[in-house]
Image 1: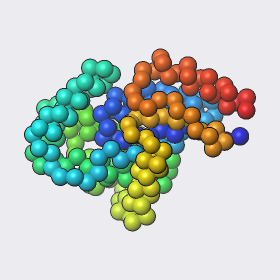
Image 2: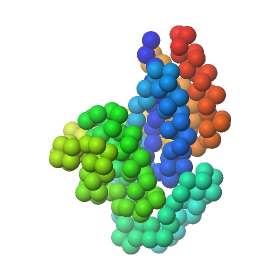
Image 3: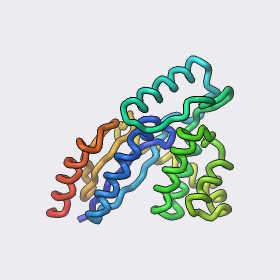
Image 4: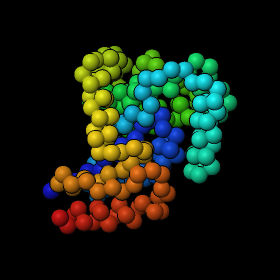
Length: 210
């Protein structure tokens, strides 16, 4: 019997930042039952051009709604300054790189990317910043930078985006439970821990008995 959680998200998705404490608790709950979690970056916004003032205003209003609903901290002052291109592909590719180099290291890097972007206003769309964060997460700087820049890492990132799209996942965060190749949806979108913890607990119990 094989079982795992699959967490489909984007490190620059505000609802995923809002969900971060919930995800951390659920991942720990699964790990305590011997079930690992596989991270799939979904690609919220890729490519594109610099934000105009109307789009920036819309995104900041969205951030405020997430802050109000979840209590997660956001830095609004100076966020996404003039010329900022909201391209989440590099941050997603950094997570794919981390997953390739050592699965456990992906979680501290995810936390660093999210905190840097939402709490500190760091531009996490650039390779130098992402490599700095990877080094803080314990990765070898040169190895991470080289792997991040490789064509096959770009392809693996695009494959993750395609996998999520093929499943019809249109919103993040999404948490799936997989047992023997069969997927069950735990949540699509933010839900509080008290709602999801019992749901995951029942699935883990069933998985243990299968």
